[in-house]
Amino acid sequence: MDSVWFSKPRPSSGQPLGLSREAIVCKAVEMLDEHGMQKLSMRKLAAALGAAPMSLYWHVPTKDALIELCLDEVYGELGRPEPDTDWETALRQMMHAFRQVAHRHPWWIRGIGEFNSVGPNAVAMADTMLEAMLSAGLSTFAAARSVSAVSSYVVGYATAEVNFIGRGGMDAAPPDLAKIADLYRDRHPRYVAMLGEQELWSLEGQFEFGLDCVIDGIRARVAVLRS
Image 1 (spheres, rainbow, N blue to C red):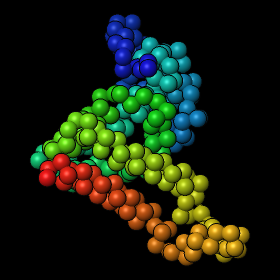
Image 2 (image 1 turned 135 degrees about the vertical axis):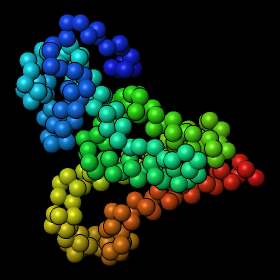
Image 3 (image 1 turned 90 degrees about the vertical axis):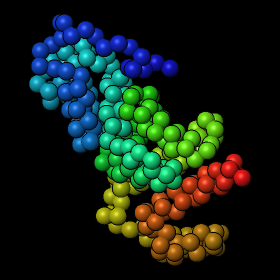
Image 4 (image 1 turned 180 degrees about the horizontal axis):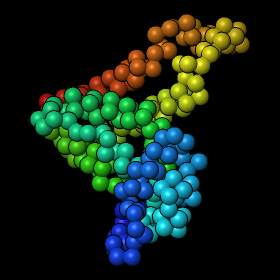
């Protein structure tokens, strides 16, 4: 695995004047928020910064390296729970913050897993989650498994959610449930019955239910280890 974080920044001497890695990343995040990952290019970014395209490469070696830097910049928005917060409250706070950040930066949530997340902000978040689970009495192994379980749920849910919202979501015309029901009533009656449960269409309600299920499972593991 290669990563921009494994190499040392180039020395300050000889850098193009008026540019910095921080400024490049800040502008790139703005462009990613507006246009998404596919439309970002080093040429367009340089133009937005009023710089020559090749001058960006002094600070950032490749577009993939730039995306890594941008991902970690957004991880820095997550914040941390107050000291001495109990593990369940801390976990819930971080997972709600994770979902909110995904809504602000849809490209970010889609990039998790595709690009490395080993920058200082991403690692600080993981370390904070581990600290919460270790404080509950779990071993390092069990704490890591718990962190993986809950974060995987939130990443998966938030990715589907931002994709749904991105194509219109709640502002788009709702699906014609009657047509769907007519299509599957004979073959899949249980599915058709589910379509009538209006509460299932609440994105907030679905998220909370899933998060409750994951945390309930972790709480049960904690209780077993403490007994």
